Image 1 (cartoon, rainbow, N blue to C red):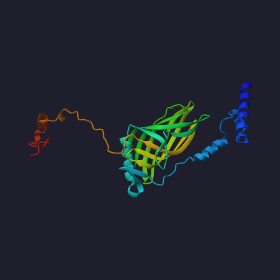
Image 2: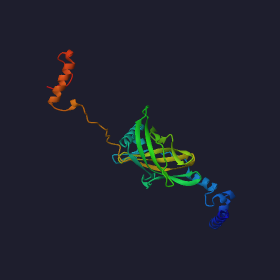
Image 3: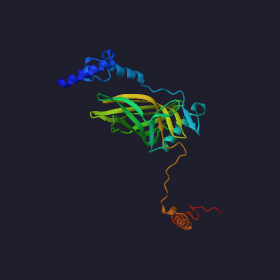
Image 4: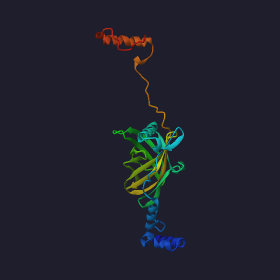
Amino acid sequence: MSKNISKRILFLGVALCLSGCEYLRTRTPQDILRDPFAPSAAEYAEQGRQMHPYVKAPSSVVVCRSHQCAPAKLSMSKEYIYNSLLHLFDNNNYQKALICQGDPASHVCLENYITVPLTAGITPTNAYIDHVKITDVIIGKKANKVNLILNYNLTFGGQVPDCTPSKSIVFAKTIDHVLLEDSGYTCKMTTIGQSTVKTVLAIDYIDLDYGYIGGFYSIGISGPAYGGGNGYMILRLPKNAYPLTPQLKKPTSKNSAKGPKAIAEYKGEETKQNHGLGNVEVFPINKE
């Protein structure tokens, strides 16, 4: 017990030498005895004010196609934006999209991940997301949204928590209001329960040539682990928006083989089945 008290007194002396009166002004005696080096409540509040937990509304959506970029409101409609995003996600179904912290002006990556400050239990730390796996792409029943199943790769403090898939939607309400949002997915970051993560992405940049989607994001975490952050995110998908490549299956029927013999056998079977139709042949019809 005496050793712990002496260590705390030593830490307090070091902190006073380094920070002076400002250290005592922003901390209570309980804060000093609990953890002399932990940020104070005033410092946490200042970090929250600097973080600005909201999504910045973009002034316009820029779309790049045929290696030319222009604001969508000049020559496009919200239906075109919706169809382009549908093609882009459908082409990249079951693929892994890389996520990075980007610059909203140049649309280049500054870090190969995004950072979300959080507190897990009583420990301040950061969560990181570097990619997301697109598990499914479904057109909404009302045909005004794209339903997505996304699996975010979230890590914090060197740990990889178990997270449920995120049920997300993409919709274009207007030409300048395009959102990707989810209903919240859970991650087990602590031993006492699940934490819920909610994500909103206000899209302002769509590159159909290279498969890039950029926008201002806001991520909030609630539960035993709580926190949040915002900034500019860029999704880098492996495939572009065109051309579409549907998965076509090769016919396996024995009558699908080419050649006069197969056609003659099929004609004989059809004649037997349709003997009441006279001389009418249903298939095939030979061109003279």
